[in-house]
Image (cartoon, rainbow, N blue to C red; front, side, top):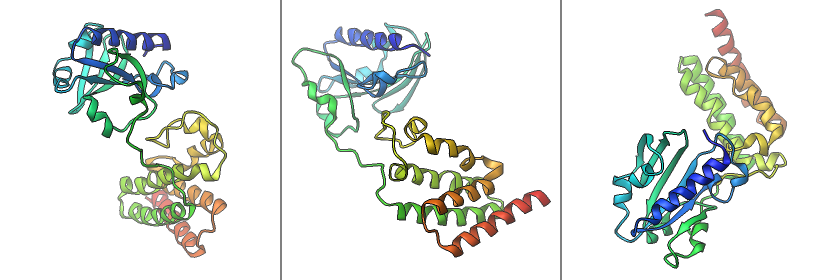
Length: 263
């Protein structure tokens, strides 16, 4: 773990290391290492792209000496063909990918910041990204509610079969993902760095009212039926849930609870 100054200094150091390589063109910081540096804290990491000259990206992937000359690596994991996740020996964690300039046209990223570039080799506007991201925000409470109600019904049936892990996903995972996708339609959102790739990111700051209820909706492996009942209550408070489905879900949840008590 590191403080803000350490992280930003390390990015600058990486830029200086790349500058020594004639086949390096640019270093782009992303996420909190990009344009969102105001949210850097001790748990932040380095997320960046290295841009190489055409035909020159593979050496940056095959040999990480350009990183290790700054600080030895305590851990490295090649998580994709384009780069690594890694831990410096001094505790700074990060991940990177290497692209050639034309490949950036199809890369998915937002909010980049140019840390270093070889003069006139690349335009600054490349940091904004060119490929439109599919929206992860829903536009229909109807669809979310319908999916959530049916997930509760199916999940409780699986719980009664003894498929408790599957039940947990149907009751404490899939519906919560759906809820997060439409939460902006249900509660005023506090502006705090929304993430284009994950609605769960910084949810507690962005939706403080819902954050208070999450503990009840996510009670864990052994209390999936209780989570189902509270989620059903929440759904009924925001949407006209079909009365018969509500009745069936409550009956199944009580069977689950009674079965556990009797067992």
